[in-house]
Length: 282
Image (cartoon, rainbow, N blue to C red; front, side, top):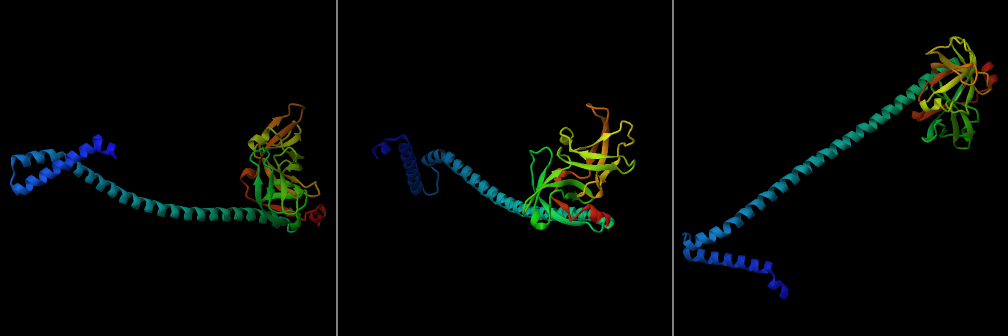
């Protein structure tokens, strides 16, 4: 406490209070008239009034700005809620549009093949680190899916079921080197097979290989399944030819094929269940 009374801050406050009391005394004695003493007191206290006025103005501005910011924040909150609602509606629209595209193209294929049975599944896992875009789907053997079933997006082939579990399945995509299916060019009727290729997979392409060097296949040719496999029907579109290249290890030629749909963006697809070569023959 003793240190407090001896501090310079305390002494300054005491001097200010003394000056204020002196000013009040002279004002009481002289009434409203101005004397030399009151002029001195006024001169001393004028800077203090100015500081007080500035502080008051500053506080008013801060309060005003705070009120303005509160209004802006409320408006921003309202706009953000409205934006959120619009984004939800857009997501619903895109989902519905995707489903319409999925079923519209599948319906065209089903009209040509009335015995086809489809099971809609959701893509539950797409490993971004996997360059071949293998993925898992939401249904398995309990739902009737079996190993080797074709996996489609609309009328396009995206892969085959590689391994089935009770409640989910693993799909091998058409750009995976482990994938292979008999195929043909619908224009020239040239027959061979499509498989994945490690180098082409980097760009999302697969390979229609073992073609004759004099092949008539060209840019834009449509490659479809040949239906030789007992689990794969004929005429499911795989993709279109992007380029024709010569093999470096032999004298054959291959076509670079761009899949009919972007496998990396799949969220839903169809599994063709119950298909056998016998059912197609019927």
